[in-house]
Image 1 (cartoon, helix red, strand yellow):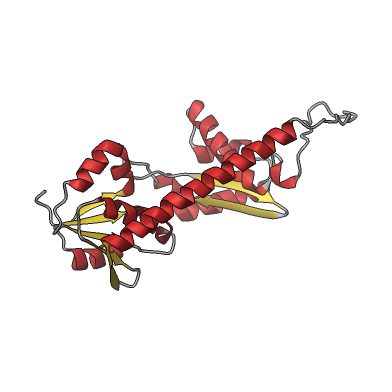
Image 2 (image 1 turned 180 degrees about the horizontal axis):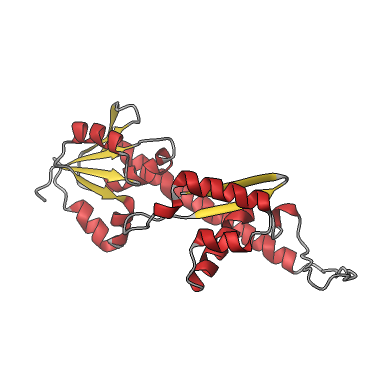
Length: 236
């Protein structure tokens, strides 16, 4: 390979941090997302990494603490490559080097974590199977209103649990798409709560929803909901 530097990234970095990376790795460095490496397939990805020259430099930028969570995976990929050394770029622009042996230890750490995760998943599956074999009791409820569906679940696993707001937003977006209606307008026509509608309108206005257009590399969406007396709406 002719390239002398590669930048392995978890996701695209901001423009300001990209300038720091270019200053360290050079503007000629090839930037590769972990998704692009994964899409090569195991065999092609392995061949790609092994074709690298020993003098090839690999840089791994960490713009925030979240990207550090996948650092062992990227170091593992660097260890598989023929590159002799890997440089990690920290959020403040400082760097530290990792040799092949150190990167390999990260690869083994990822493999061990994956094995532990698989064993935990297996234990969970066995526990669920055990619960499924237990005797169940039906609870007869007197139905005064036929429009109400009673679900045998606690607060956090119920249909209106706080964690379900995202799922509900996804369903509403899908319904709006099915009828060919704007996601905001669909909600406004169906919301009965004036306060929640006002919160939604305020969020959409500040975001500039009327002029927001999705593109090949950009999506737009919104969600709103109420939980325990709070009313929230957001656009992104």
